Image 1 (cartoon, helix red, strand yellow):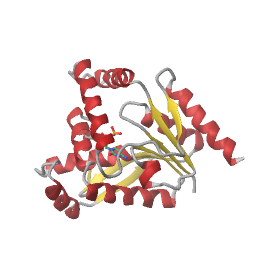
Image 2 (cartoon, rainbow, N blue to C red):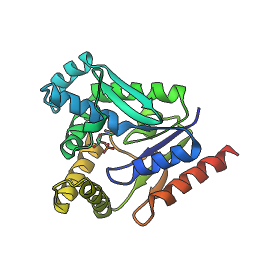
Image 3 (cartoon, rainbow, N blue to C red):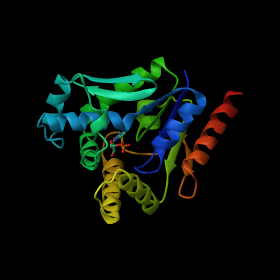
Length: 221
Ligand code: DC
């Protein structure tokens, strides 16, 4: 099986790149952030405080999380309900970052990801894909970019969806998420020693995807 991991901070362009790589190589794109988002969204819907480890643990034991592919598109079901249309909201980003701190959550989410990678050629983007989820993945990348540039990209994306939001707020949220994601004690955001570092500050997603595909196909030959 082919496993390509792309880790990095929020807004570095991981999902756009991973999606393009999956298309070029005709393999599955596993959006791991969507699984954390789906869990956060349904926990909130169930009245669970996502910062409360015990409450989240209880919720985890009673909800089934299921990743499905429909016409090549990933959909995440929680408790039998498709969460996909609801997980991109701004407040879910923060809740996903909060819920992802808990060890029980990371272990369960990692098991789901490993199961998919066991049965499929996959490119997955996340925070700990190359360090914790699939430490033996054949191809590892760490994608980053200047924080101001990441905030600009996220701001443009939110504006396109007509979100009523200020750039400064997006920048602050990204800094806060960087801090949260990098400083949690268990499986934090971190470059794997053997991951290739790519700084996308002045590169397009297409250029980054090309270089990932080139690295993968060059090694396969
Ligand atoms: O990549 P994203 O913005 O969709 O991720 C949302 C949050 O989920 C992010 O702030 C941290 C968490 N996350 C994680 O901890 N591990 C992952 N593999 C993916 C996301």
